[in-house]
Image 1 (tube, protein in one colour):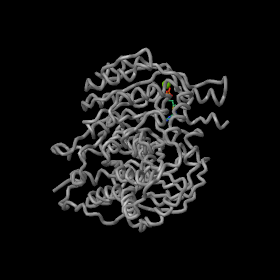
Image 2 (cartoon, rainbow, N blue to C red):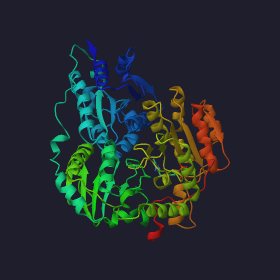
Image 3 (tube, rainbow, N blue to C red):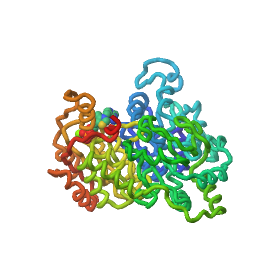
Image 4 (cartoon, helix red, strand yellow):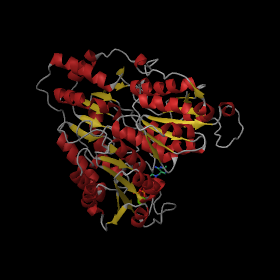
Length: 543
Ligand SMILES: Cc1ncc(C[n+]2csc(CCOP(=O)(O)OP(=O)(O)O)c2C)c(N)n1
Ligand SMILES: [Mg+2]
């Protein structure tokens, strides 16, 4: 006889889950109980459910494997929502295991303890799919269904709402097989007309590859295609490093919304876009016109042509499409191709432009790049320094620079970094946050210490929500309100958690200190002063 909690844990284990981030409560204790003698799964207890969900997201970003978090009903679910919203916006596979009130209460508005009315609608806003099992026998199939969705379609969060009566119920239900029952993504896929795509790219005068976060698994093949076709490449912020940003054909991160960043995209006559969602920061809030023919590849059929008219739309997995294109290219053997624009010149002009806008931020990020190994995972909040990382921090490997780009959620960086470090303990992990954003989730330093994960956290302190203060001053000159902060002593704050804290008197010293801190192999918090700068999304040139 197994409890529903045991059936859940067995199913998770069979899917390779080895870490669950969560907070216990009376409704999910059957799950905790099933973990008592389960060495294959580590339970990481966090300081609120938002932390748990960000950690699950960071775990997924760091490892490429789905992250799992576990909550109590009601406030546990709503606490997790913000972080699930970020995972949704950034296409990160997170499974939210929401424990739930008894089955006979859920559908009645009883205002029971922890009851969240319309929980499906609430969770539906930030998940691609979810279910509430009607019996214990449906628990394991629900888990397998979720994992199959993560593998076969766009990897966005899913939830399973687990009534306490099912988690506690004992039954002799056999373990459910992991074989998928339906193919959620592939059914929508079409045959790839690689002929037409290669024809278009070969006939183009100014072809360009535009890669987004959805293409990260196809890194090697995409690089072969780029080199064979001599294709200039622009990456989105989530796609940073899919082709090394200092590769001779790379124009880098296309987020820089001023004219120089947009030039190549606007000049291209054929754009092959793979795993790009044409989000607001990439497109300057959809004002960017792309006059060229667009070949848009995405695993999510709803993305094709959503914002930008396409001439060829392909629904498919980036790796499969890249493989098909590569097979076709081998038969064509293109040779003697040259890039149609001076890539180094564009890169240098762009760098000079951002250096003029944010000299200290750019110097700090360049200094960090020099001391950090290419595989270091950098987790950013939105702050005056980190937001310039798009243009100033050169990534040579995919998924090494993480920014809450889709939902823009302050407080993401620290817990997401903890999740990533737990997934990839062998990699150095650095957090770049501000005095404001850090305190959205700074208490998760307790989890870092408790779980013995070592990170280097840089808090850029300007005693303000500085990015917004600068923005406010730009839009409403001479009128400043609501953005000044009286920050605590971050060194003593860190020490209270058992973390080493230190302070530097100049932001220019940050790279050197980060390098030293990473050598220590324990968590260090570095507080640094920082200048206020206008964020890159303000398009000075366009005014
Ligand atoms: C959850 C959430 N609340 C508010 C914001 C708006 N916001 C964006 S940047 C920012 C300021 C961040 O301040 P800090 O972390 O100190 O960095 P700084 O801008 O001062 O460098 C704010 C409030 C947000 N992005 N997310
Ligand atoms: Mg600040």
